[in-house]
Length: 494
Image (cartoon, rainbow, N blue to C red; front, top):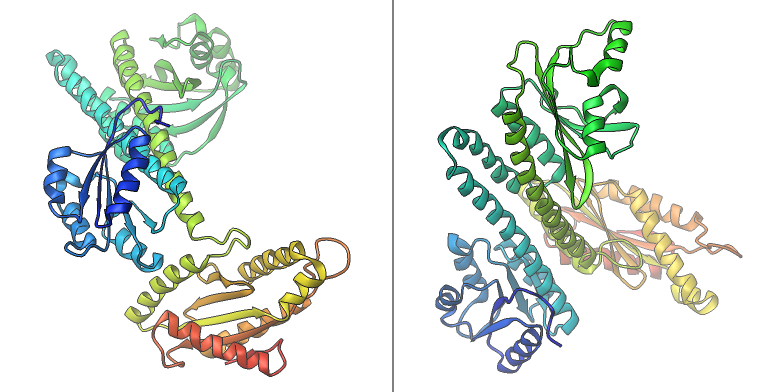
């Protein structure tokens, strides 16, 4: 069934397998995409220049062309720096992912792939690309409109260049501070803040203030700020040119006198704004007694800036959400669903990274291989649900006992691996013994009769073990673990 996507997208697919290429073409064309095949990858750069695609699917291993070299060439060309690239390969995921992402790929999918997975990853990359492109287009459009203004208006409208900074900042909370700082400077104001609140609220939350860059989430009582309350209630900008005479402040002025408060504000503007179709608060500008009073022209200018900025903030939320989705997917792809520990892929990637650091700085790295004793008896005697409960509990216990810098992963079945950076061989043995005792003493039953398990633990370390690879360290720990099994289980061996 064709995708209901309103925008037709162009996808270039480079692969040396004609059957797979036809399959991908069928799947993506059925989703409504314009798909351009490049069999074998030859002439890919020319195709990219001609088609200007929205996404590239690139095979890593092709007989005549190296996909990774092509990726490196593409990423070195500024014309393609924002082109999403999804690598596909039959290489081992650990090796292929590290190489592809290291050269600038946006994602990786292993062969053979599932149709739903391919479609989901393609949709995610296209969604993120569209969001970023739209945000940048908004910034360019607004800047062009600003430059087309009259002489005086053009000087002030150059303030809209803040949208470039907003687009680059991406995080909405940071954008509030960008706006407060830039608007205050252009208007020559000492006080400019953003207050989050809804009509009828008793309190507001100051999330950014130019006069205090370190301020975060300060609660204020809105009855003391009548201009903010009116702006929220009416949904319109409020201009107060003189707070000492404006009737809006009659009650508040009495409180100032009674409490001996010296008010330095001379005039104020409260501009309400909505975010993602929901009223969020006001943009609060104040001029002191030494400043020139704020004017209707200031209201108009600030309104223009805020209106344009809100669009950019919306885009930023969308883009941050897309990026968060990608980061969450990458995290899930490297996490064992049952135990919450790193899965085999995530374990090896983190261990390889740590090993590189260890070699570079001449530090130590220890590895523990933890194997539960007679775990089959738990599944046979208490059921697989109880077995899963034990595995979850073991993963939680290991993560709790480990340090923040340690790596905890499920190696497979009832085996777990711990990587201990900057830990000596002797220190690793002491830690392993403590783990063994903690495991043996822990009741893993969620209800009913107690459920205890023990573990045999093997220890290896650099440089003592004489190996300098992740596989070698784990293999040494594995040999030591089997030695513990043969010696009667529930032991630590090296």
